[in-house]
Length: 435
Image (tube, rainbow, N blue to C red):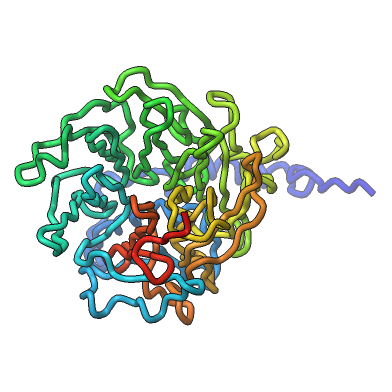
């Protein structure tokens, strides 16, 4: 039923309606006019404006608005390295006949590891500004600060005696570094065409079989549409020239290595936060088509889930698949193919991966070293725990970051939580005689 209300002119006599209209035209509209002189204030003095709340940190972007999520935040390491006698070796579990010992302590925020031709162990930092050198003096290890004043120098690599250092916004080098440990020069910049953005700006650095430097430029966010300068792997010549994009669609990388036989690049990748506690899976990837591979960020998460924000209209089948999934929010970082001759043969060519451990999970996972065993074609046959115990009762007693194989076949492992480097050996002798 369509009912119309009668017009006011139909309800009032004409004379009354005329008088009301005339009165309304002559009366001042007080609610719409400003008085010539405002009345004196009678209430309390005006209060200063409340400043706008500070923007949320980058790690909190897309965090769900619920009580459980609001209790989670990145784990902050102790401000000082742990004394050697308080390192958690007794809590770390290794396979039978393996032995773990302290190689060096006192390296606050120890991150990437590289070993020089003369045995010097170089260790980077991420939250600090320095690179360390661990030298052997008359049978005693000594920790030195090789360089200071650097911008989150997480990535380091060695090639023909030159140490390369990747900061957030530049890559530099120190030539003949092991000859200059007593009086090291300031690193010489070779490449600076990099965004100076802190979120996911720290880099991993390695030298490929083509004698080029490979490094990552992470997404500047948790989940977003990255600019074309981000979310990629690049490579440059050793003098900083010839920059090329190797792969795209990569959120953040903190570990890379080349297959010793196939010469293909493998890398770990940390996936987005806040989708859920159990999704998506972090990844192990392989570059099969340099310059063409796209690993899906931000459209596809974990290799198999369309992103709830950016995945509309896309299929994960459009993108390069991971070669293995490594657990949700497990934070896989450093990885290395085992090319030594100390460990049993079952580990020949396997990938040792340091999982730094989750922070945005109520029940944390990671905080361990896992080993990925491969088939002859380079695909992954299995991923198994190898060293466990860095995570105790849902709290970290240590957090592994990187692994590196020494000349004798033993392995070094960095721990940025305790500021230490451990050494893993096998058997009863320092060097196995199996070959």
